Image (cartoon, rainbow, N blue to C red; front, side, top):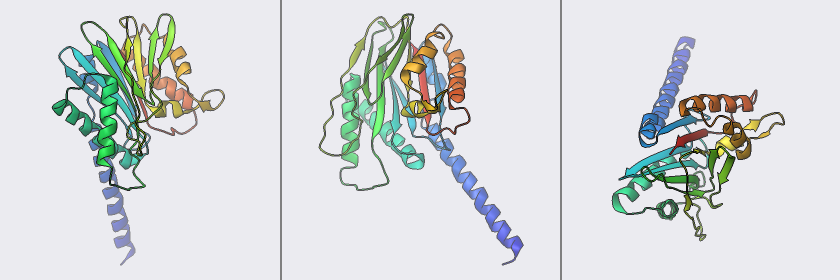
Length: 264
């Protein structure tokens, strides 16, 4: 084969790879709700989704039942296509729960997810696929403004006039294999109308940078957001994105990033 034929094959191969990557990226984003849907459910809200590569391991889910709204953010362990595949599995499990079961409390939803993922992979031994996920779930009643939260290795950040408060989730992930049976508690929150809330993926706090080249932590983010709490959420989205970029600085983004901010 001549040199021109070899170059043509290489060019076709590059084009095919680009097309596959573009298709994978479209499929990843298509499975997630649109930001405008989030804004329909909450009085003011945004989502930042910055995958490390063409696809990400972060996802979120929305559901409403009567006056109740459910919001979940989950970080699937791993990277790339396998983590993205697990997002679809978690989304399908949540769809199954909505269609077939009456589960009201965030802690119970985490228990359901854990059992479903364990059952799906009970007889499989794929060392490349990590079934674990960190998950945070919020339930908000849009009339009473009462809110409940449950977290599986994920916290909820509440920012109000008195400062920032971290509502801790349980340490156990969802989907862990083995005999361990985690328990997830639902935490009730009162007086939520004067607060902003943020769910952040695990990768947000894996970003290395800042003045000391250390990982960003939730308290630092909370302190930054405290002075911005009166801004509209679309304004906050822009400054949070800038803050995370500035924190990383010359370092490469080392993980997927997802941040969801909302007012009740």
